[in-house]
Amino acid sequence: MCNKFLNFFVDKVASLRPSTLSSVDPAVHVPCLNLLIAFQPIVLPELEKLVLTANPCGSLNDVAHPRFLKKVFPTVGPHILNLINTSLLSGQVPSEFKHAVIHPLLKKPGSDISVMLNFRPISKLPFLSKSLEKVVHTQLMDYLNNSQMFEVFQSGFKPFHSTETALIKVMNDILVATDCGKHVVLILLDMTGAFDTVDHDLLISRLQHCVGISGLALLWIKSYLSNRSFCVKLGSSSSSVAPLPWGVPQGSILGPLLFLLYLLPMGAIFRKHKVSFHLYADDCQLYFPFSHSDSSPIRLLLDCLSDVKSWLALNFLNFNERKTEAILFGPNRSSDIPDVDLAALTPHLKSSITNLGLKIDSALTFDGHVNGVVKSSFYQLRRLSKVIPFLSRRDLETVIHAFITSRLDYCNSLLMGVGLGTLTRLQLVQNAAARFLSGRRKFEHITPVLASLHWLPIEFRIHFKVLLLYAPAYLCTCIFVGFAEALCPYSFAPVS
Image (cartoon, rainbow, N blue to C red):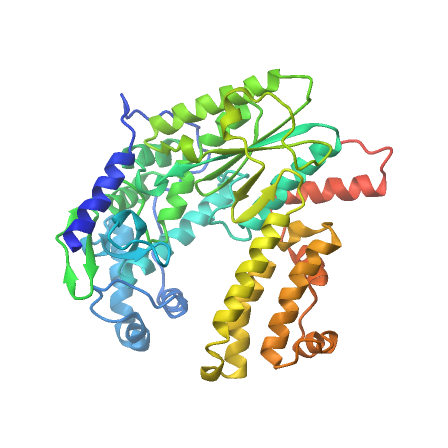
């Protein structure tokens, strides 16, 4: 069974990589003023802080469990430091650090376990390899931030960026455009298995010519990507070992960052066609405002999509047209799809879509999202009622926050300004959770209960989130323009 899973995962990735005529890097090479030539060795206190604060998870092949390794770090720390610094200075990654153990996990409870497509491969790497990656990741991030290499409209795997900040930016632009009397089409592009199909030669070329990594630093990354392998384990059984010739390492610390750098040239395509966009890892959102009477912008958008598809194919990334979705927003905020000819996009047009976990309808009421949150929250409350006898009051509150409050808070800043009835349904969920935790009766007044628990009501939680939300660069512009327009609505002029 382990070997069957191994062959399935290998064949699945191989089938996703589209065939191309050439593996020449299609990206435009940009001269870099700054260069990262080598990763610097670290000192023992720095390594100790890194190891002791790391999440204690590793591979099933680890000789010592990460928790035990933390306990004995004062003894083994100098040896680990020597291992990591030797790797950084020689540009070589130990082969044992490049072997992953895959554990198949069922994607959805209740799915048919005889269908391997229903399983997700969970990759686990050695604990010490993650410590080495963390050192490299920290130095690489410092270099990229100082050189301003990152794509501004990429919110994946970056500090203080999230799906919520990405959605705020996109929805703000859409609201501004519709308030000006324009239609806006939003397109969600889907890339299947994007992390697994990355071409190593193209990635190395991009790091060298577009990012400015060279010398020992580039040699280390080449060693990190080459000769990787994995096996599948089920219980005490293990499969044979298979190579990983493509993709960034799943379950790694450095893999997501390398993937973002692999996608850097995509932004140039969107800017060339003057199409607004926002990325979250491999999730791509395109949106384009246009006037109802002018159909020429749709042609520009279709040309942009054609160039994106060609670029994805040249970069061995699989564009899944069947999962591509589009939604149209009109100035009258109607739930009906406006009568606008979108040409080849018409088959993908929907009245509601799910974007980064948020259900968005064409009328921007967010009723579908709220209904989903209410339904799943009450389902979780019914499940939690079965574990009350086993949990203390403190643990029960922690579980409620994990299963209920997290759902109420997810992207709740986007609910600013929605109807009172929409917020009332969410408030009913919070009231039920408060009564569930405190043991109060159904018709007992809820305000004193919420106050005793120090829980802000839903409306105030939304305001609290907006006030405390850290604004990335792409949101700072929106906030500044909004304040300027509010202070001087009639004489406002755009500020560079």
